[in-house]
Length: 373
Ligand code: SF4
Ligand code: SF4
Image 1 (tube, helix red, strand yellow):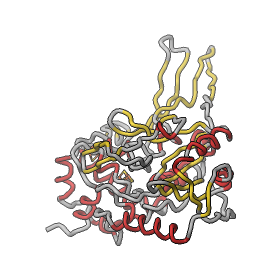
Image 2: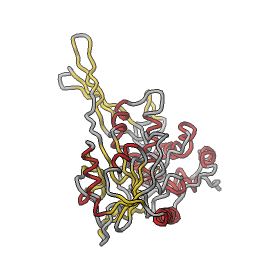
Image 3: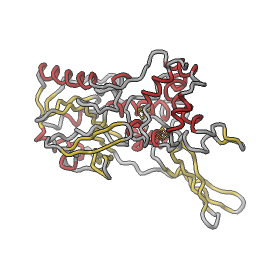
Image 4: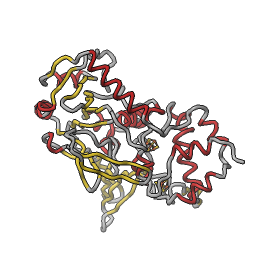
């Protein structure tokens, strides 16, 4: 969504004590502001009006099957890396009524339901979220039939990214070349330090906001320092996907015994697909009124782990958990590349953290890419 001809000015320094100015600037331009907010033991995108609404002093601990928030003595705003939500629910909502059908004598009329969309600025977007959004753009915007609901929400977004200077054990964006530095798709990008932020504009919209803030030019030394902090974050990631020849290895692994082993653990709960920033499966529900004079046509998120996802014309062609897990992993890491030209995984690690039994996509891909005995 950013203009190709945009020339980013040099990074600037923005003092923490002036951070409220960012809220004022966004508000003045008509944006509602969403940010990471502590909610039900995790973080969620919620409306914020001041820096105090951010999870100041909190850290997240993420491991396979485990997510914990802990309080600390630091005063950073963005030390929690992410929660279960990527940007996906903000552009492709989990449940949305598209049409209302009205019965009229022997025919019917259809009324399109237009969503109410406000210009929305999102603070605290991670590089993996931007990479996930670019994949969703490819699916919902840049194909034969752009999705008008997605398109409107997408156009109204202003994205303030935060570069990661620490990773949690489930992250593997470095091996997917999607992070930890935000590379594209942001309007503004912050790198947080104790007293200030390095701030960069990535679009004209972002520059318009940046010009409202009290900033100074960042020194070359400071820019290098922050680059090194981001590089250290990349180097600290221990998980990685074996990207070389992975699609071929997975196609050849169709009868690999590992599928039975992972299926014995997998609960077919769909959590991995719900939290994944790139999964886009959906179905439609028809909900008639009690007098059958009206019906709502609603789009809802679906998952290839749902038992009826493979049910067509009286037959389920993916009846077992093994079939479903194999479909998910092979699509995500192999046939997605044939279909869309990129991997379907951006290395955010959410499916690892939020899998109730801690199934790890990197471990499974690694095992499946080895020949079976
Ligand atoms: S497959 Fe897992 S790690 Fe990859 S993008 Fe989806 S949730 Fe993130
Ligand atoms: S891999 Fe984990 S999160 Fe995904 S369906 Fe199986 S049990 Fe649920």
